[in-house]
Image (tube, rainbow, N blue to C red):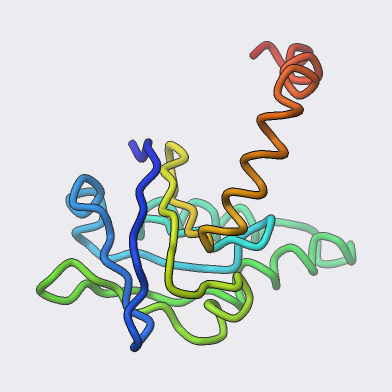
Length: 143
């Protein structure tokens, strides 16, 4: 399970050290893709396979289903770790998510999110300000 929030830095080659705590879960490698809210999603290979199967089962006759599948699948890339536990994030994904030097790696149970630190701080500040209203709405889901 991925949980927690970690500060890291991208180097000049676009490499990011994945927190040691998560490396064992990603020992077979991972898949990184365009996420939502201008962050990147990083999945284990096994979890990515489940997501990809669900996306491929969406009806191609529906424009929103096609758009969402394209967003996640066409933007995806396999990742391999170097000897220092780093992955190289491709430039097109760094551009998409606005990643600069300072990065947040956030664990969200079955995947990681990779955020530019400034974007994360702004997002977190806004969502924390609205946390009571969000909790009210999620109450209908049994949470």
